Length: 292
Image 1 (cartoon, helix red, strand yellow):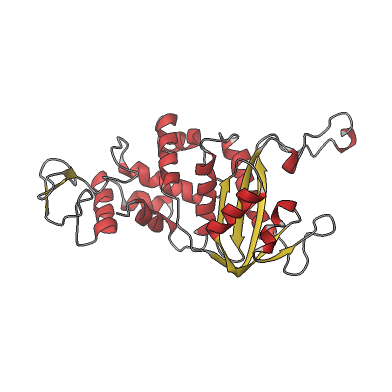
Image 2 (spheres, helix red, strand yellow):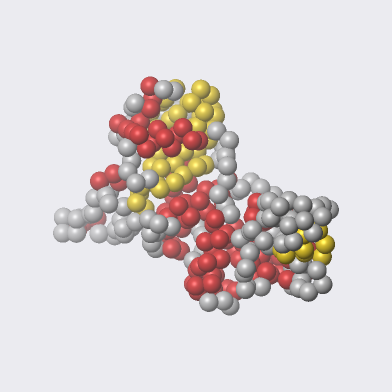
């Protein structure tokens, strides 16, 4: 849903609350504290309810990313749309300028939006690509080829001190990725066990030795990047495309991921990749954000 439609459809807190009540409860509102449907509206406050069983007072925002917010809900809706529409993400200073809110407020909103993007995915099957990337540092220089001896490149790939991100993608399907403290066989195996059906998948990787032992537990094919990047169906180019989006978001919008919060930015990239074919990702996000 584009920004103009959101602005026109949800111009006030009342309109936003009415929509969220419809999304969260439909025709059967319930107490988010005890689940009781023996509730009634209160006359003091927009959208406030009272539970006659546990005697709690609540709104449709209770227990969601919107809970206790002081920011108008129309700005929340616009922020969600801006995040979903930004293929390479958006920074908190930019969001603050777009919505006329303080940068710290924009940052908190962004982190709450990212927290609602965590998804439980079915195990991947079919052709599955696994790889890792490293985020941080500076981009490789491209206009000093003749001066490489005088300006040596920093170590690249697994030799760097950059933050490692491990990922797996189902060919033609969804992606899962997360920061990893170290890229080891144990960490990779644990990650793949959470996301891949070992009995129904063909794992494709490069020839990194950490994948060899994993290949003993499932069907496994490798591509030798020293010789070629594609060998028929054997390649990891799908996941490389996702890494390109993740790195461009880091370099173009964020410039730095702390280890503490890196998972939130990776989660955002995964979520937007996984809803790329959705007809209305805005509505899908709201359903997830207010799910009881």
